[in-house]
Amino acid sequence: MVDAVPAEAGPKGKTIQVLTDLITFKVTTEETNGSYSLCETVTAPGGGTPPHVQHKDTEAFYVLDGTYTFLLGDESIVAGPGEHVFVPIGAVHAFQNTGSEPARMLILNAPGGIHQGFFMDVGVSVEDPANPPTPDMERQIAKVMEAAPKYGIEVLPPKDAE
Image (cartoon, rainbow, N blue to C red; front, side, top):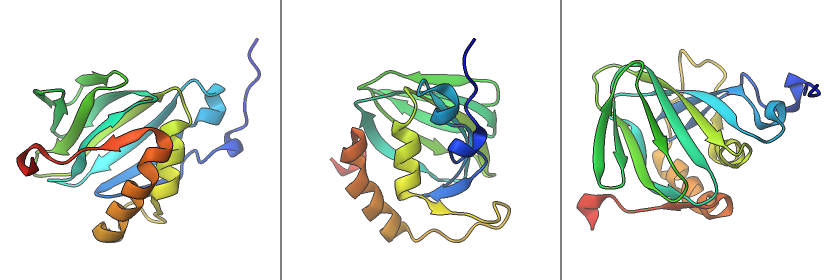
């Protein structure tokens, strides 16, 4: 029998804002003995992440609402509700909400702790997810760029900037 880890051990239920995304922790690394973490993400229209590589963890996305366009290597993948995208360690990837309404998905990272720590380091606490603050993008980008290497994340320039 596996010992249960109390929910109070991690940020479960806490919502933070990272760039254009609202991230709510659903299952923390503390609850899985480090195996994985799971969060729900709401992305504003046109929002998403820049191309990046994770050198220490895998990532899986499961779309709940809306439409996301994912970059995976050189491939563009459009995913809607019920569809998923798996990103192995070392793969270039990014995502963008290409719809006109907020989109929502689950993100699983394994092993746990890496992305959870990254999100906690760079995110801004959100008290009312229904009325999030306008993100200070310049400050957020600076925080992401500074913290990313600590977590094995390599942020890449957009393809059109190369």
